[in-house]
Image (cartoon, rainbow, N blue to C red; front, side, top):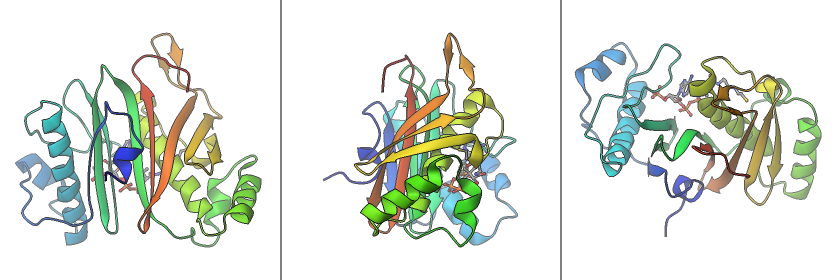
Length: 225
Ligand SMILES: CC(C)(COP(=O)(O)OP(=O)(O)OC[C@H]1O[C@@H](n2cnc3c(N)ncnc32)[C@H](O)[C@@H]1OP(=O)(O)O)[C@@H](O)C(=O)NCCC(=O)NCCS
């Protein structure tokens, strides 16, 4: 049975996830140069997630290609492809799609544990503290503050390729449905794409083993969600 991120995203998105790092994933010379000075842990996650991305690229009919970080660390995809990467302790994933199907997407994985003291106050805005209190009272077994944090990181990864600008945690207000969906309303001007202004991101979340997984996507053509 498929579990994890593939269950959160539409069929047009190819998702590859792994909980183990296979040694010796081949990197392109430019990729090796990008992590040349990095610690082994960083090199391992960088390679593992690129292994995931290349498998997803292959299913989209693309030959293996270097996936280099751009000036703001954003992954740079072959023409016609959008995608997102995430890695945390014990989990790596890549989600890729054709631009004809998906305008933008973002994925994030976090260890399922509460945020460190003081962080929730920094990443919430508007009604979100009351939302977290309500969710916590109804379902205390879920680290709702971490779900919110991960959902916002997914939104950032989907926002950035369109806006090419920073988005603060307090510039987007979330609603979270305990059934597994969330939506983020931007509190700043959204990027314009053709005749659309993207000012809201909708997504899904799940608890997958010891991880929280979140994903957002915006279809290539506007549909009500
Ligand atoms: C960029 C950021 C979201 C990455 O999240 P993280 O939990 O630290 O790390 P993850 O492992 O989940 O994701 C790392 C991947 O994110 C991707 N990423 C980094 N910067 C990115 C950007 N500007 N745009 C899109 N994707 C980006 C990269 O692919 C990176 O993997 P790589 O370095 O191996 O290529 C986070 O470090 C950050 O800067 N957050 C602050 C901005 C934010 O989230 N605002 C909330 C707005 S509501």
